[in-house]
Length: 105
Image (cartoon, rainbow, N blue to C red; front, side, top):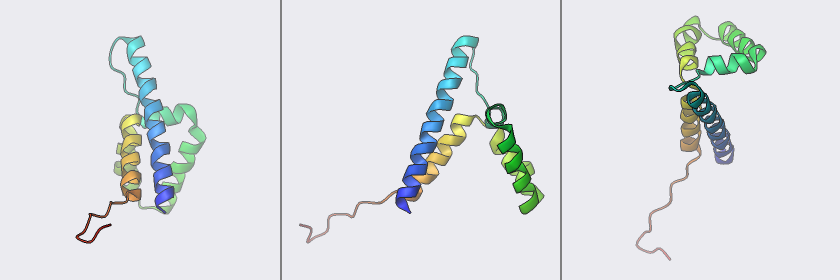
């Protein structure tokens, strides 16, 4: 399970870096800071999957989960959402080192 969490963490970190690079390039080209929301990025790259996820959320979960909850997350900058997911999965797969005890070899 830890391995899967670490792999997902790395994938989300890669997505965050790519989204950050896209925003940085657009910011340099525009001459002002540009932050692309996750919904704008997702709808431009794969609108079919966005509609599928929206339909799944609306049919299988209560309405309050999609409308104020998920739409707020989708309105945030893409790199920040991916960084947050990366952190969550990193913490899920993190293994604390055992402290050196009195009889540690």
